[in-house]
Image 1 (cartoon, rainbow, N blue to C red):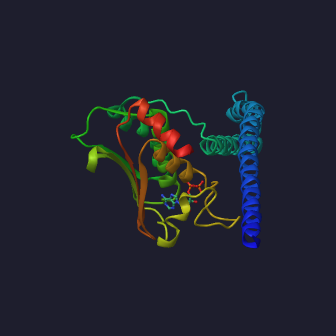
Image 2: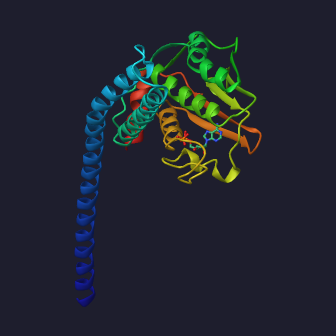
Image 3: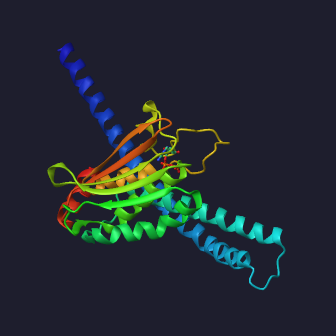
Length: 274
Ligand code: ADP
């Protein structure tokens, strides 16, 4: 009799704990939703005034009527670059919060790979020339002309990896290669001859806000969000990113992507949310 009562008491306690746990996870889900909505609204509200700052500081910096002296023209340019950095940060935070909330909408389309070398050269030749770094792009002959994936996200991944490659390289070269990999995957690698990444940090850098040099007065700017966004996008596109790097010699980041249909992309999205 007594044992039965104890067991009954225990069952009740367990049920209560289970209810509490369910309440708690519901609260967590809601507050994470609030956070995402807040970030999305905030980003939008921040972007509107920032756009005016960007457009007007650019006009000032161009100084076509010579109304500013040299110092003032310099100040206008600083306002413009700081504004551009801020916009990038806002966009990155918005992207991350969308990923966290499972709200990224992928659009699978025919991506014309043959257009990529020109596209990337157009974007990165100016910085390559400025830093006197060679920038080479190679597209393997064995690849099909079109690849089914989300072209916009793919461009975002590559631009992030290439920006890093140029940021952390002072001399030498940056190479972008598109090749066929095992299991019908596309392998895109970005190789640089820059500062490299210590082995014990190579996993960490894919987490949000993580940088090898975490000091506030560090040499290189940035937020530590780029790589976490890249790896989440690669995952949403059914692939992954690998890094191989030696300190003082350089780094190689490779993105592996399968060909996808819209249905496959949607089911990856659902699976990740669960
Ligand atoms: P951010 O570049 O804004 O700091 P990322 O998430 O893109 O953020 O990169 C995180 C960190 O990884 C960088 O701060 C840097 O320490 C390291 N890293 C990324 N790419 C490279 C690279 N090509 N060479 C050396 N270090 C790199």
